[in-house]
Image (cartoon, rainbow, N blue to C red):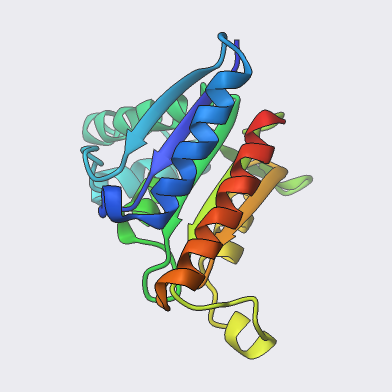
Amino acid sequence: MSKLLYIEVSPRKDRSASIEVAQFFLEAYQDGSTDNQVEVLDLWDLNLPEFNGDTINAKYRVMHGEVPNPEEIAAWKTITKFAEQFKTADHYLISTPMWNFSIPYKLKHYIDIISQPGLTWSFTPEEGYQGLVTGKSATLILARGGEYTSSAEVGAMDFQRPYLEMILGFIGIKDIKTILIEPTLIDVETKEKSIAAGKKQAISYAKK
């Protein structure tokens, strides 16, 4: 059995280009095998814990090999629950819009929760940083209002794709495919062509 964790980020739902393309990916993935399982995380319906003082103190105690106090232990257990849920998947699908040249705060919040020492990455002076989420793959479906691949000057403002590809690679996911839906803030015909091209890519990637 193969498990896919689908992380849905856009709050626009049926008006979202990234979600529209993601649905084609999911259908193709589930058509590929009756054993394929999908778990959906809608970040707007998820009660994400605050990364507060107890949590960050617990993080540093873990990094330094110290024993957290009871409040920190409780906070760290909540973080561990989210990270362990994330690691149960074999494949990941993230569909997200670009907000202010980067990612929505809900997705950054989720990443800040699961990207933790001893859970999704480790560090030693001898080996440096090592990702712990290995042997898995991810597909990113990224909707963007502008055409950030049009030139180096415009591409320099893209903090969506580079960050997501970097952080996934940092925690150990090396097989990353990215589908760009761009531009979306333009005439309807051009936008629909971008979405149609994204759907074609999504089906192709899902079948693999």
